[in-house]
Image 1 (cartoon, rainbow, N blue to C red):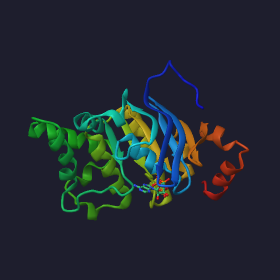
Image 2 (image 1 turned 120 degrees about the vertical axis):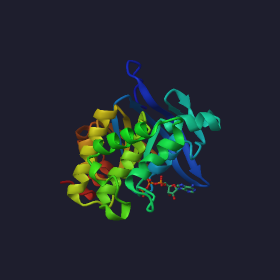
Image 3 (image 1 turned 180 degrees about the vertical axis):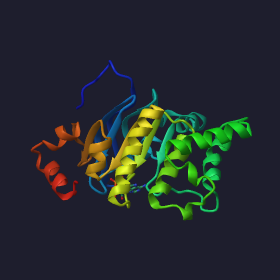
Length: 254
Ligand SMILES: Nc1ncnc2c1ncn2[C@@H]1O[C@H](COP(=O)(O)OP(=O)(O)OP(=O)(O)O)[C@@H](O)[C@H]1O
């Protein structure tokens, strides 16, 4: 059981969360707090339920029991409109950036803005698109289409597209998967820059230990349906717990 921390502003509070699919018991008593302005890394082997947890946070799945409170609201109790409003405050960076191939970078970024924010002038749209592209260091790609960009650039544009709605919470699902080591380092830096510039609170799902070490204010290790250990990267991996040691040993670290 993790400690209550009444002095901090908790944006995600998960208590005793359970989720099964038939007889596959994926989450079994998950507890997690994400405090405002904090990057929390969720580590765990393939199939341990990291994505299921994220999907419960954005109500794409519903827990069997337990509490999942996001920005002060229990997500499983929200109606459609409340959910839509909540999701606008959450930026979700998917494993595959899912940009529209037929649109330019500018059009990809305008799309969520025009769809979700009423009465913006052309000048305001341009200003916001350029500002967010500048923040991810890719202003020069504004008129290109995704097929002309590298995997790392597409990932950055995907992050820019979520940032354009100024989310309070960012959820990164395997942000460095499939990228070369240098590009991984750049994405890790970007995740930290996003936190500084946009004051976001984030969950970063990964099995990349370099990513965990460089982006995580706190690391939480999901094993056997719950968080076996939470703390700084060093606190978690100083542990003598054999499953944590073996996770460390099998995941290459630079
Ligand atoms: N909608 C669903 N219906 C049935 N089973 C599901 C569903 N979603 C997830 N699962 C199962 O739950 C388990 C956990 O899946 P999840 O996608 O959360 O794993 P993960 O930890 O994110 O893995 P990876 O690192 O490979 O992405 C898997 O065995 C998966 O098959």
